[in-house]
Amino acid sequence: MTSRTWLGSSLLVLLVWGCNGSVDQPTDSPSELTEAKTAPKKADTVKAPVKTAKVEPESGLTTFETRAYCENQLSRLPNAMKKAEIQRLCSEVELKESCVSKNGKPIFHFNRISKRKKPQRILVKSLIHGDELASGTVAASWMARLQSLSPRNTWRVIPISNPDGWEQKTRQNANGVDLNRNFPSKDWEELALKWWKTKKRKDPRRYPGPSAASESETKCYIAHIEEFDPDFIISIHTPLGLLDFDGPKIPAPKFKPLPWQSLGTYPGSLGRYMWKDKNVPVLTIELRGSNGVNSLESFDHLQDISGTVAIQAGRLLNSSANRN
Ligand SMILES: [Zn+2]
Image (cartoon, rainbow, N blue to C red; front, top):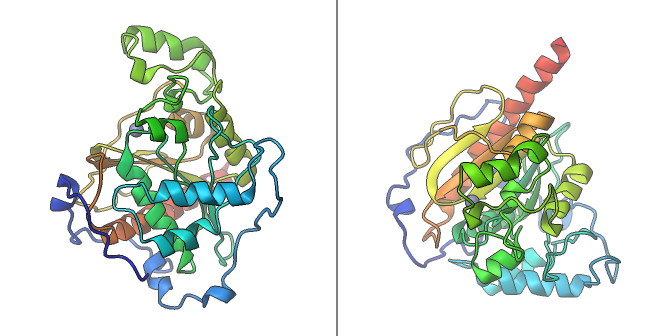
């Protein structure tokens, strides 16, 4: 990677960030970084199929408009990459037909396919809460890194999952809905609004919406889940400073800056919808601080740990499925 020296505002997160946390790597699963050394040249890389439609039927957005939006928005993230790197990244992003925000902004995504047999399929999303700025920076850095190597796992990254919230710098979307309470978990009807009224005292930052999956952004994620069919989901947030895992029991990865700690799930949250209802593990990365980071190399390590957790969880789930 040519421009990994991203400088900018400093935050507590990286004051405590060290490389001391050892990666819990299975011996047959080298890290994405290790594979980078033998990555094929750009022209040889395997790319996800890119939709080349001039106009996406439902969104009305052209591929050119989507990629221009990508460049514009990624350049506004804290500690943004250099322009050339952003252009290279955005030249590969895609848009699903239904993935448009309330205000008509594209919810674009990036694919990277593993060449391995039966890789884990990992879906990453960040900035589902629009005011958690650093989460988008980390996702964009992962995308750039994936572009330069041949990964163990197959990845799909949605870096700006809530474009209207991101532009307004609000947690919620343009309708005032907390999208991470709007997923159609089985208990949504019974509990989502009830919990919001009683346990959250109608905190507007936690409003789950008028009905399950009422929001266009939520419909977009569901379309991704149905089509991409992930084995594992990573959701990047701020600012709690921990790794929260909803999935099978695996050895906690050793990662000093973000301790392994379970927060539980909520009606309408992604963890409840995917893990409790659908048996797909969800790793929630809660970065420390919300505005920026002053070095991204450390997050490479976090990506490798996340990939390893996905592999471990996949093996466990497969073996228990075989026993049943
Ligand atoms: Zn959040």
